[in-house]
Length: 289
Ligand SMILES: Cc1cc2nc3c(=O)[nH]c(=O)nc-3n(C[C@H](O)[C@H](O)[C@H](O)COP(=O)(O)OP(=O)(O)OC[C@H]3O[C@@H](n4cnc5c(N)ncnc54)[C@H](O)[C@@H]3O)c2cc1C
Image (cartoon, rainbow, N blue to C red; front, side, top):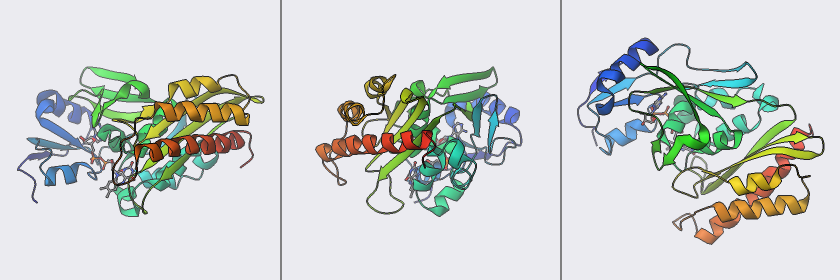
């Protein structure tokens, strides 16, 4: 199918992009890698009057360490995260999750920012950012604001971004003795998750100082398993503590039965992946693997 007709603008600066959105944000759609938007246009699920192509804006792609956090530019492509060897020790959940996304063609075009703005409950980055307690930086004509990952995802394909805003970067706090893991079950390579779980831990000696857990494909958005996170704070990562956190995360999941499996099956995969992810994350945070 062909998309409905739309105007097309490709601003050459962020200032120009937000100016266009100030004037026509309500009737416009931002396009980054186009890997989710173009299919929506072709199926006519989305019929914007204007597409604002930000794909070539300067300084919005790349990952760098800055002021105690990792800055992931909104236009950073999945493959840039996947192939970043520094991240394998600095923040291993990032390249691990990137590797699970779609196939090489889509990983070469799709962006991290586009993925979180698309807010597909089956999207992988949303859960990773929830586990990492990331901050999302949005820019409009009136300035910049920061939105916590936990407040960003508001429902299926719905975020806290206003129509006049562009997501410019994601800030991920960096802490010593911290690491994460991403486990994903998919029917075949390149498929969206049947279930996936993001886990991040920060260790203080032999105890977990802080834990983050994000769930994919088991709710109307990426879910943060808060009770499970809280249950781990200040605890040693014993089998019992991990099993209890996994039980609480499974209880927080809201899976629906579909062609990929029953709700009970998906809930149990959450439990298994939280256990597996926590064990891997703790070992990595201790420098074990
Ligand atoms: C066959 C297929 C398989 C896939 N498999 C997976 C998978 O396994 N896991 C997964 O997580 N994803 C998967 N995806 C989605 C893929 O990761 C997309 O690349 C991603 O969702 C969107 O990124 P994009 O840069 O292409 O965004 P676009 O398609 O350009 O935009 C998506 C949405 O975000 C908005 N947007 C984009 N960037 C910004 C910004 N900076 N500021 C404000 N709004 C913005 C757009 O207006 C649009 O609404 C798959 C896609 C396809 C087609």
